[in-house]
Image 1 (cartoon, rainbow, N blue to C red):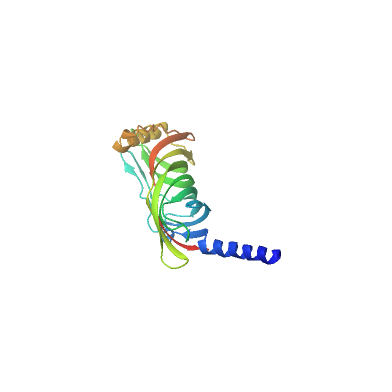
Image 2: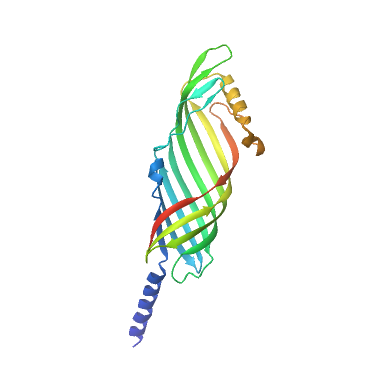
Length: 232
């Protein structure tokens, strides 16, 4: 009798766990357009609270190339960055979660991103001497912030996840590695050009860029997104 009771309790536990669908997996169907693949895994840990991890890999700019810079004495060709990103999250679902992780949610997130890309172009100094620009750009970013969204169940196990609002702050480390040397005047002109952008003046960013040296930049961050997913 005790064995039957134990088996019955285990079966009820398994069935209840399946009914709640504590594991959710989702993908961004539009990210390949931008040369990126993104997938998210989310799991319920206690009532109304979940933890998730989003990972993505970027292999190109996709259909939307990042336009080059043409400013004063220098110009560059279109950029194409590649790299990876990981985003851990904690979510709190406001509604009752007996049927799973659905409805309106709020939470916090962190992000780590590592990207590299080639910069090609030309620089003309004050003596009208032209120098080729051949560099590797390396960017590492850590960000954190708050978020809000809504997860809509469209069928028993399928859902749409709308990340609506995600303000935060990011800390980036930027480095230019020369493939061919360029004069120091290029870096002086580049720093001055970036400082002239009003947006950067507001946040008091320090653009003192030099060859093979890391520059730290603090900027506002914002997340939004759309995922299609499956609960199990």
